[in-house]
Image (tube, rainbow, N blue to C red):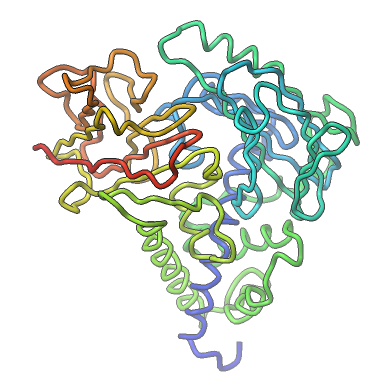
Length: 437
């Protein structure tokens, strides 16, 4: 390192954190889903995990036990495949969905999601999708849609709507899932693992906090990320910052380790501050009007990965998030209760469906006696006011007038996410979260 000033090392580590965070988190999501040390492990019914190069299907809607990813929805069943494009071309074939909502989102190794294909783009039947490595793009070829990415790994995330008031609908969705076919033409269908995918088996599992905060764990995870990205996707400034921090060979010297650790913390603080300003704020709601499209804004990309990793493109869905009430104070169910009122002429403008979900601040669903984690336009039994408005109570305890419109909150800090699928007006602002007690 020579005479590198420690403040320079710290600044370089902070920049590295901001650039690396979404890519390291994408890698962590992939490893959590594919479990390379035991790819054939039986997953819980709430998980869509599967071995690399296979597609996994979530069989029951998400619940508080699901701890993969951030802010899962409770409207659709996920079908997820992580593909290793170094293994060759992969082809996805899907059944006809009729009028049911479905989509297949393409997620990149940097957490970008340029495309979501499905009912909105192709109606009930999606053409076969062909995935291979190449310049980022999508085109029609021989009646199929060819998707290319310069990176080694790619995620395909399917969502299929489940009707909450029809107990038999889950069976119908399972049949649709079972009709999905993913195959790798280069090696033929039925292979258990992609040929080179098990290189990741030697990546020791490390706690997420260590991966973000500890220099050695951070360096090791980032080295894996850099290895699997296209070389042109790694800026020269990143390589220079790695050298400045002494992370080229995985571990900094003792003299700079503390400066690197402080810089990584600085980067996390910058990301968390940006989460509070993902887009414009109105009525206490943060409106991310760019979705996963961060362009060249590394800090925005990191903030989206922190709060809404692998969020859909805005054409497919928008996700207003509230963490404060109408007084600008943090939402907290420990001693307070709240209400959100949608006027009769100002319901959430979504052509597919909408839902309102409550999460712990960490992005996990809230356990509650009703087993209700969201309410929306398909929730059975919601009661409307005489003027046609819809008032939703958000609190840790049920309101005195009954549980029909109760969205249970935790006894502590929480956030709300409103999902609008096929939004008619991406600029629409939800009403404030009003403190009522």
